[in-house]
Image (cartoon, rainbow, N blue to C red; front, side, top):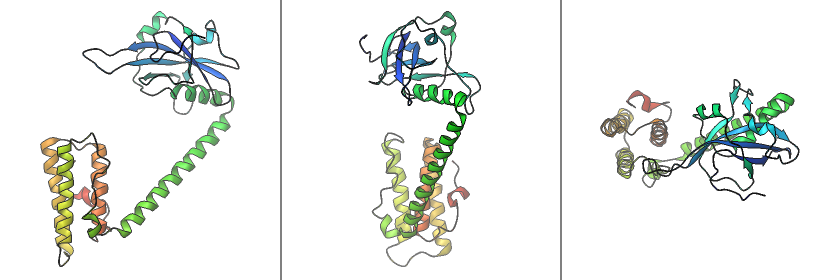
Length: 268
């Protein structure tokens, strides 16, 4: 058997097992390797072959030259192609090299995935054409599991919000998930905004009342507006995280009954 390759070359064909024990394969159409202008960008454009068989294919198998077309679910007869940058998995078996056809040099693809994409697409397309009820059953099971997971996460968060206090938040680490982005400086500034808001609300004495709480909460969002106006760092993920942490403070100070309170004042 040919020696396994960590980074495949143009034309390399790799076989893999499907979940029912049969074989399918994929083929490298293009390679893009690191350069001085684009370091660390080893990746390959891989096409899923339009072939499935009970035994490992030989390199002369005609189906290895066909690119699988997808029409399952929302696909509209699209080629099964994806850019992949991670090493070839151990369970993918190199079986030879097939020079790409001339028209394949013009192929363009914006899909980025990993090697799991190819067994998944190959088997799902086959099931769609041969046992669509099985596909629909699996889809329903996944949707049910997904909804259950959402409900469980929401129940956990509701329980957390019901118990959290301002005293708890004095020791709370805001934006604990933030690592590489935003920058350390912006993470520190964002945490300072949240902690100073908690300290004002906690007040170390008589608790703030009514409109005073709202003013403090508005000031918190105003400061994020100013920080983002200066640095432009709040994108979708940061917006969701800030609103979620802001909601924690709102519940802790007794304003949790106001839904989406940050939306009244935020510019991002």
